[in-house]
Image (cartoon, rainbow, N blue to C red; front, side, top):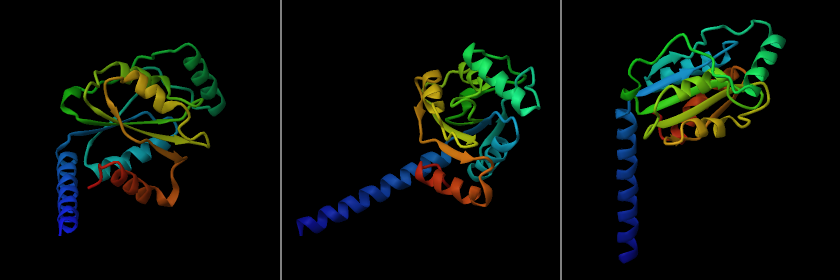
Length: 186
């Protein structure tokens, strides 16, 4: 009898905890911020925005990167080596209203592009939930999540999503599964 009561209590507890977590996620104000050079990350960001209902914001450096792939690789490496913080063309007007901030970027030299570093250093992420997502050509997340955690030290970092190039046909379902896994699915 006692064992059955404990099982019933545990089931009830976890059901209520799940409902509370879902309600909290539903009431969270979400921003999907991203930097995209080739458009791959933009497509992922748009899918995340559609599935979460959050606002979307493109991180745009004041000076555009080269459109030539080999040249942009050199620019990215030089920026990382110099720990550059390129100025951005735009700002989130009221970052304080957001509880959850998705941060999207291509994997450049196993880390984040420097415009993303500028973005992260431009706001106070204290108490916010930061959710990285990355497009890559084979380098997965590299050291990008560690870089984001270092630049937003007082935030909660959730499990990142790593997408090979555009994500292909399974992108939508992969994002759904990931959002559900991290507790931000609808």
